[in-house]
Image (cartoon, rainbow, N blue to C red):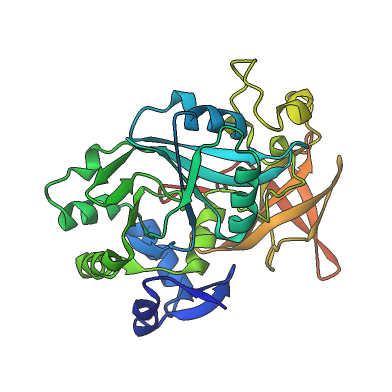
Amino acid sequence: MIKKTALYDVHVESGGKMVDFSGWSLPIHYGSQMREHHAVRQKAGIFDVSHMTILDCSGASAKDFLRRVLANDVASLGVDEALYSILLNDEGGVVDDLIVYRLAGCYRLVTNASTRDKVTDWLENQNKEEIAIKERKLAMLAIQGPESVALMNAWNQEIDFESLSPFNCKEIGSALIARTGYTGEDGVEVMLPEDDAAELWHCLIEQGAHAAGLGARDTLRLEAGLNLYGHEMDDQTNPLTANLGWTIKWNPEDRLFIGRRAIEGDRKSASHKLVGLILDGKGILRQGQKVQCLEGDGLITSGSYSPTMERSIGLARVPKSTDGKCDVEIRGKLEPCKIVPLPFVRRGKVLVN
């Protein structure tokens, strides 16, 4: 049976076009994906991301457990700090990507909806330290865009959200507010009891936030050059070929996190890399299209029309030595593309030509 978030009725009443996303009924848009995309880049948008999996890990050995299962190192986290990491399997493939928050009483992991069962089972199977791993049934809202923090300040004037640094968080009553997001814009994400979600949603809409759906969320993250599980990475993907090397903390050398031995030899010799592509002509870049380079073949992992750049863009895994130009096969015809560094767009500014 398809699942519904606490805001399902709000989405329907607001004209959201509901679709099945990883077993959840969520809005793909509220009438115009393009308008929602521009609202986030220029002002502020609000997303319902309550389908994400929220896991609290607690116990005396919780830090040791996470230092073993995560490629990034939670030893660097102080209370109310967060970091992005990946989970690797023994072969070095990516089980999932996530954000981990260090709270006063636990570590909170936010993982993808599509990997819920796989990740929870995997963590429990690795749980030699016998820590407590509890899934939390909370709503989660993402308020993103250059005006998002000002809207949050209007919602709660007793808290200075501007002072909350990126990848820092704060518990306020039963809510957790974090300066994180998935759009390449400034913003916050709020985890709170389901019964409180509609009130916050309506308050932010009244303050000027624009309701935004899954479609805009995807084009925003693509412009920002952010990976999506099942596209840029999966159980067979070496993270060093997916621009994820920065998420791996190799020191100290005696921290033998799961997957380390499988990928350590590729630190300086990974065969492929993830790059940005801009289509020179007409057409749309899509996942699965073949990329032809002088150095060898590659594959598009994500692609779409960029509302900000007004051009077709994509992410592609290509041979490491590839540079400059390539061709992409679209409907049986080779179309020229330019290879560019990532991201395409950051904080509303186009960074590539």
